[in-house]
Length: 384
Image 1: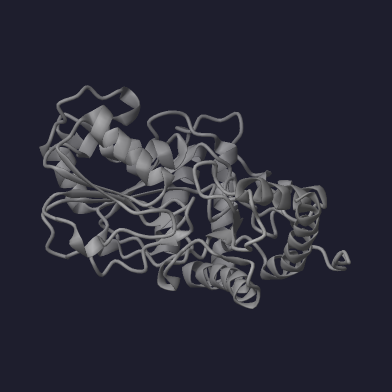
Image 2 (image 1 turned 60 degrees about the horizontal axis):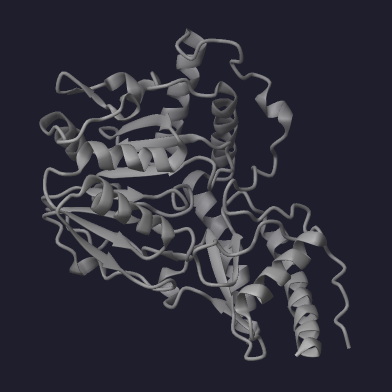
């Protein structure tokens, strides 16, 4: 007998892993004060950009002597900028356990052609970070957005390292406790955990990273969009709101709203609490059902933002087709949008649980996930 559809529906079915759900109090009216039609170099524009930088610092607890800049091309642009301007002074340890980390490996090995060591792990697992040589530079993601596997903490990174640590934290910032003393370069996009509009990246540099920039010139030419120094000195204006290229002041206004909302829910600790509650609801659901499980092998490394799931029922003969069918059924019903696994990841689902998602919506969606699974299994069995 077919399972009956649940009665309760999520208020907001948006569980995409990027762009992510807007803060629950967001409306278009929130953007009315945007500095539209004004130069970003006018006083109003510079003030808003500076506010975005300093409120980011306050919410995330970034040390006062770290530089924060708004740069082009989302997290990708920020991380590429860091790699192309900082790497090459010494060998680099490239670390990857999912697709985005693998992309950074490609850049270092095939594009920059730096002396390197590559450390990889399969989807669902993580590299042994304690085994790395931190006298070399180290590039890694804090949270594997496409694998649902995150760093449990920064304990493996030594305080007395000689190399720099370059951390892609795009689905970790504003949801996880980042140890700033262990991170020399940190990048993210505000379109992830705070649900901002895309195309802008954040680049955070420690004093050690600044010292490298001012003492080392890469062997390769740098396009204008990557240049962070002039005459051997850091271009301080980039980290005070004078961006390299023209930012969208509409997107900046949207980010300022999201930051204010973040403060209203308790800042970083409040955002972490919300994300943890969302992820825990899914983990509890997996514990109660034997046909679905976390892709992350070790519970200590489970992401609390990009929760990746796999179907484990022996009756499923084509995992990719089955997972797509379940995701499609939930989308058609208007219950969960954009929850299919990333294209390079193992077959399954990926449900965003960052702080802008309401736990009540996760809880309302999960019975529908059970219904979609039961419906597809019945159809699958009849076709077999």
